[in-house]
Amino acid sequence: MTFVVTDACIQCKYTDCVQVCPVDCFQEGPNFLVIDPQGCIDCGVCVPECPVEAIYADDDLPANQQPFLQLNAEIAASGKWPIITAQRPPLSDHESFKDIKGKLHLLDRAGA
Image 1: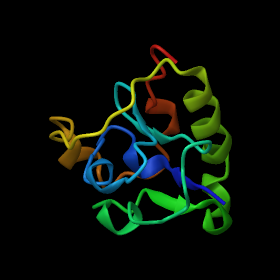
Image 2: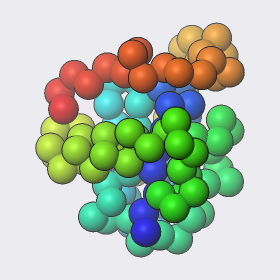
Image 3: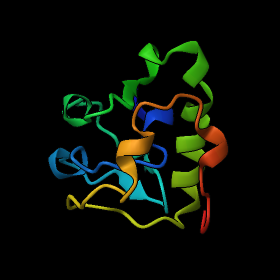
Image 4: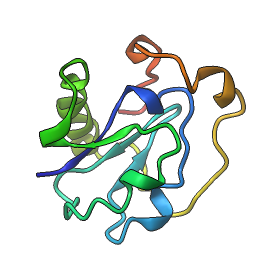
């Protein structure tokens, strides 16, 4: 099992989850975070920290979020997004995006 960052993170990029990760498995893109499934130890401490409930165990992924399992793995494996280990402020316009659903089309994969 691994944990997966989903649609709710796009264009918000809260990093509360990053500061509690004991194995530094989060990687940061321009407007999204991913979890490296190879580094994730399935502890789940990141899940309650996310203010927009963007993190799920792979076994609990809603059907409409299934593509994010592969997306997290693919981007993490590329090694092009840096590992993030410290909390940072969310994106400046996070408030206007936090309740929007279906944001995959807004994902900026630059560098991945």
